[in-house]
Length: 171
Image 1: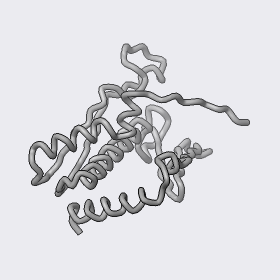
Image 2: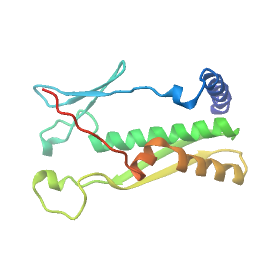
Image 3: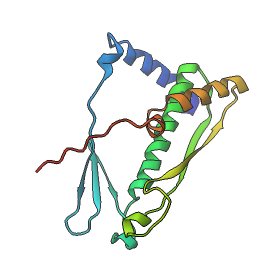
Image 4: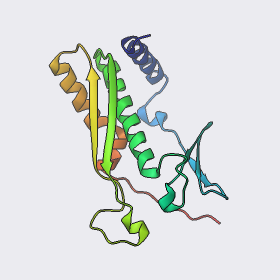
């Protein structure tokens, strides 16, 4: 199956799924992810539904490099979400795509965690998305798709327009 065929199926699936709901509010769902630090290695095991992956730091932070760091995972999640938003937009707008790839890059400086002074923030910054699309679509269609993805992607929007986050400490 080609990406173009997938997009045709995706558009049909989205129409069918939307037809099951009386309103947009009915689509709301609770989602969760849980992370537990391994008692002996500190490796962070992330569980989401039936999926598990690990996150680890490098030797400078006492880790073994057994998985990506949290900032790297963030970039991966942003790249995944932006790629999916392009797919949704292409399916909805009938834009033919042969391939879509998003590479996220950022600057990161962990100096503050080491007690070192820096003017850099202690989180990934200067985040950049490089989007690579192969398509026979007209320039106007691609411009509309780029505009849609840039304004609609929920997680890149979260970075640009932060939401509140409450930390609840449980015993």
